[in-house]
Amino acid sequence: MDIFSPAITDITVAEVSATRALIQWRTDEEATSRIDYGENGLYLQYLESDEFTTEHAMELTNLTPGGDYRFRVRSRDLAGNLADSWNTVYFSNN
Image 1: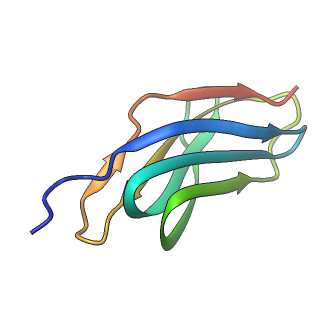
Image 2: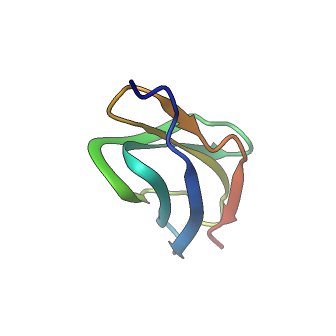
């Protein structure tokens, strides 16, 4: 029985433009993908995928040009164990 959450590593903001950002991360086992994000320290939006993978990539679109964003990533493995990056990552799309 799997009781361990997947390990989240290598969180990167791979590409940023005025209205989009590509967020990538890895997990040590297959897991789903979710990003909670927003401006001014608030996680008012999210994007998620139920696809199980170890290489996660999600594109945030319709961002406010010149915005300062924060986000965290979450992944849930096949056994239902949830991992959360807890650390907030910031990016600016100036």
